[in-house]
Each structure stands twice: as structure tokens, then as C-alpha cells.
Image (tube, rainbow, N blue to C red):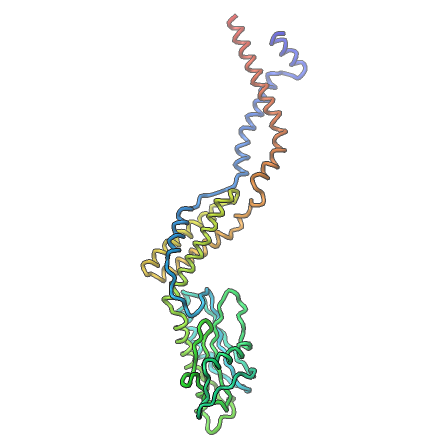
Length: 373
């Protein structure tokens, strides 16, 4: 049977065979055009991040020597609590005026950490350890004072904020029959590392005539004690050492976050890295590098500022919710869902295209043979 006869027979049954094969090739062309678009639209967005720079900066930061330990635990936030502990009676104090010396100091330290200042008066405390009588005076040894602090600490406010460090500044007014009271025979206050300071207030007794019977007639002047507390805080917070410790802590926090994120992104290939996250990672690396260089030059203020910015960028990038968008839909699940959908469609298209190629090849060869004859 000739090609023309076959064409006529098929045309009667299915229509124009040439047109049908052309339609099959059009379907193939549409599939070839749409598949790359589908692949691009379902692919994970991954902007580049500086993995090598992250590793290099992390290596440099790990080599920075640790500063001398501070007498106060490092924290971004500190709560300073001033407590006046009274015997069994009422008294007022000039805390509003005297606390300005403390707030001035906290303002000076605002570049290093955030400080809040609060005060309280504690009446009727539980009985605490009796001081030792030494002639006309009373005295607390450090061991006995430690027992006193442990006893009264149950009445002091505990730190309810887990993100801040509590500093206790305690003013202890002893009972009237135990005045004057000293610590270690000559001192009126005691500095306690990583806790705060405690001071004895009994010098107001010189204002009274005869035996002191009540405090209600006085406004307790705590100005000098507050000033001494500021001196104690200067000792607890070695400013230069504290700045270096804070810079190093920020750099390590930022570096650790970026190294962890870099390692995670290299292992999990379907994790999204959008442009915003990539920019924050790059900014964190650049800011950390500048902070490290300023620290090396001894420019602590600028290094502290840059290290804080680096931490903010690294933490925001590390906890960005967009990183988890496709973790629940891995690559193998994508194929498991799309293959049953596309395979039944692809087989007829490929089969039709194959038949079309064979048809047009045969048609071409027949036309060529006819021309030769």
C-alpha cells in the first residue's frame, strides 16, 4: 500500500494525519517550554553566603585571649535593687534625692549594658545572727555576716527576669541596743563579688539626745551610703575589662551563630536562603570583622557597638522563619508527588512525538524518492 493510500485511509478514520502529528509536536514543544518554568518555580531559593569568610573570622575570634574574670557576671541587663532593712519600727529615707548618684553612674555605663534601679523597705525581718560584743561596740566577722545575708536574703526580691542579673545593695539598720555596729571591727560596709554590697547605717544616733528610742522622727540620710555603693559598683564592674569581655562575648555569640548556620545550610540543601537572610549574614560577618579589627587596635567603644550590631544581624538571620519554609517538603517528596501526576501526561506526549517524527521522516524519504524517479 502506498503512502498516499495509507494517508487516505487514516484521514478517513482519525482526520488529517499530518495535522494530528503537528499537534503532537506542538504538545511536545509546550512541555519542553513549561518544564523549566515548573522546575524554576519549585526550586529552593538560595542566595550565596560567605562561607569562607565566616570560617576565617571564627578562627580569628577563637584565638583572642580571655580577659581577666570580672567580679560580676556578664549580662546585657542588670537590675539594681536598693533595700533598707529596719528593726521593728517605721522610718523614712531620702532615696529619691540620693539615688541620683546611682542613676548618673548607670547612665555612664549605658554603652555596656542596660541598668534598672529600684528600691524597697523591709520591716520586721526575721531574727538574724547576733553580732559579737567588743567593749562598747558590736562587730560582725565575715563568717557571721555571711549568715546574716543568707537569712535576710529570703526577704529580698529575687530576680524574676531570667535575662538580667540582679545586684543587691543592702542598707542594714541594726537594733538600737546593738549600736554602733561594725564589720570586721572597723568597716561599715562589705563588698560581695557577684552579689552586691551591704552597708551598716547607725550614724544617725549622733543626732539624738540621750538613748535613741525611735527612728520615726528622722529622715534617714543614705546619701553617703549610696555614694559608697557607686564606689563598690566601680570595683565590681572593671569598665575596661568589662568592655573587652562584652566585646568578646558578642563576637563569639555572633561567630558561633554564623558557623552553625553556615554548616546547616551546607548540609540541608532544601533550606531557603532568601536575599534578606543572605544580606543579614553578610552584614554580620562584615560587622564582626570590623569589631575584631577595632578590638585589636584598642578602640573598645566602637568595637562594642559593632559587635552588638553583628549579634543582632546573626541572631535575626539564624532564627528567620523563612529558613524552615521547605524543610517539611524535601526533594524526594516533591518527586513522589509530581511523578504520578506528570508521568501519565508525559507518556502520550512522548509517544505522539515519536510517531510524528517517524511519520515526517517517512514522508520526507517518500518525497525525496518521488523526485528522483
